[in-house]
Image 1: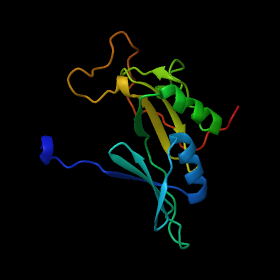
Image 2 (image 1 turned 90 degrees about the vertical axis):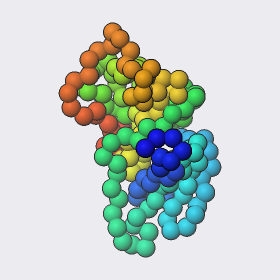
Image 3 (image 1 turned 135 degrees about the vertical axis):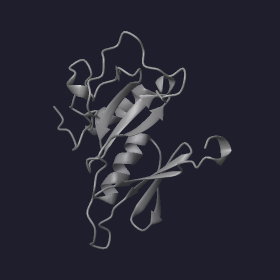
Length: 166
């Protein structure tokens, strides 16, 4: 199904272990105010999609399960988001596909053509910020750039915990 009949994503949940800490972190990183909506949740408007941070331990029950893979966010000012991430000390210290020319925590053009960098929130949720002019969507006209290194088989390495500041 495509077009107006296709369902659309309108909210994505990220589990966090400390709602107050997550609120400060995401407000600083995203440069936007969150709104508490009750039930241990804070909503951040990210374009047409709401990024909801939720503390599943509110009320003393549940455990936090960080995302297994990065959540990708597009931005028109990658450098500004990078500076905020640097100030927060949350840049990833890992490599993408174990490639020393593709450090996750630096702005780099990835083998698939996206200009991006990776961070981890205080609860270990991996996030990737991508220059909105370089989005790879798999559609015609968004193919990886020729001459870039080949992507090794396997999964993309993304941060699992908050990187240490060096």
